[in-house]
Image (cartoon, rainbow, N blue to C red; front, side, top):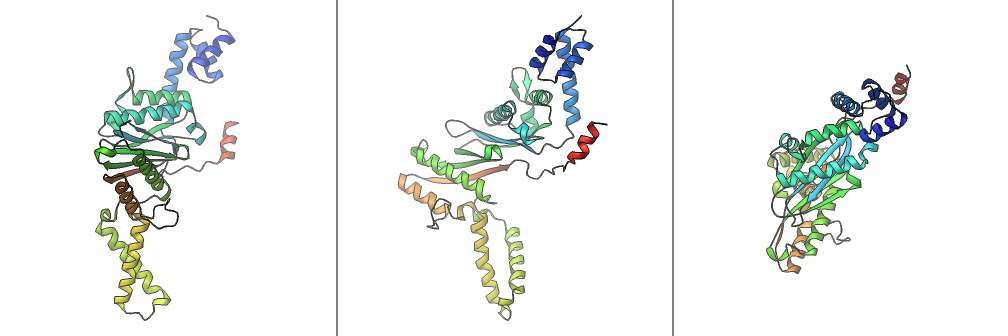
Length: 310
């Protein structure tokens, strides 16, 4: 069965595959459009398997928060290039996965991938389809969710950083705009300052012991402390531990919007709660940075071009 250039164009629009791939598929299918689509789908899935070994270190973080403030979830979905991370279809996929994770509360990533995202299609099925059409490796890397309380999300730099901040608030404040603003401000602070802990009470003894050990060595090696007795140096170290809390614990950090008043986040939360006549407790936060911990491959562009023309 013969086919025309219009058939190639139509197949390309249907599948989002390259022109030459569409022409080859129609030739192999003897002009049968449905068969050509099937062949390209098969090839797309095969390509998806081949791409699975390629590093997907770019991508976005996407968040979903129900109108009531919970459930809420944030996901990281990776792709190979920053350019493809701006693909609208890819971003819609990430947003849909975030919503599904929030609403269905999967136990783990495997359970999330097995959930139905579209009629008759799991998240994994849709992921493979996106790989075939976008033609880059795509991986849903991780997710986290809150199922209770009041949650606020913040997405920074177009999805490079995703934050959820979870609060427990008294009933009369659940729909209060100032509470939402407070949550947004603190979520922005988490994005910018990257605290390791929520509160100093969350810092484990092993971490503090190691920090003391490092600070003690530093203090004893400092020429300015030469000749000072150990008990004085010990007091100096304990003072520096306080600085560790103020740098690494959200509630002990200086609230970034305090405009030089040096008000801690803990004090700011208490002041807002008092002014509104209710109670607000910050219960936790989640911060995802796209690609953190993934070893990116340093491509030799010149070598890649040379290999393509051989």
